[in-house]
Image (cartoon, rainbow, N blue to C red; front, side, top):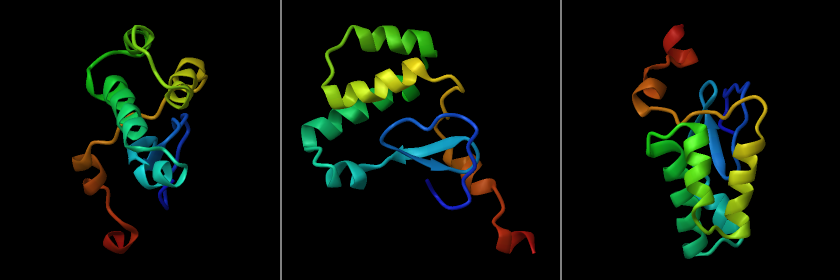
Amino acid sequence: MQGTSAVGKDVPPFAIAIGRNSIGAINVIGLRRAGFGPALRAEVKSAYELFYRQGLNLKQALEEAGRRTWAPETMTFWNFIATSKRGICPMARWKEVRSEPTSAEEE
């Protein structure tokens, strides 16, 4: 989680939370430290792209994910998405993140 983040929804595995109820990116450094090789990191990226970038709703994304074969590590992401009770934090739009004033700008 990034400093000054506030979340009331679930932050999916492998994500970096930023701002309010948003994620900014996949934690690639954390994946490397956890021993995820290039192929597995690419698969995690593919899962995030399916969920966040394809314009699908939750049910559609889970159905599409069910048609594919995923490594057990990536299934952690999909199982988390499927069992979330509070909703999943959306991907932040950079423009929105940059437009939030910092505490120094407010003074």
